[in-house]
Image (tube, rainbow, N blue to C red; front, side, top):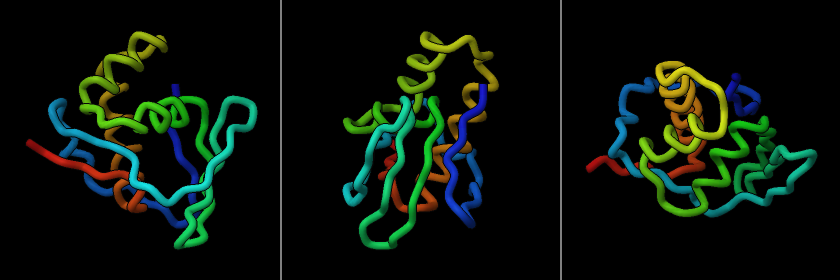
Length: 109
């Protein structure tokens, strides 16, 4: 299973900060549309366009309300056949990209 969010020039920062109890939620400011089960979004202020695959679209949809990183892991492992370690690693990488782009708010307890 591949998690990805494509935006030109986007690089993931260190993903070590996304422990199970960290909370995450979407920040406002994106216009988005679903196309064939995947989200395409335009950041209003920056003008950047994002294309999310099926899994990153699923994660993005979960983040319309505040979630813990652990709850995202559990939901994905219930929905997809994925190894727990791979799931944690890939989710952390995606969340790092989203945070780097300023698309999510992250709060550690």
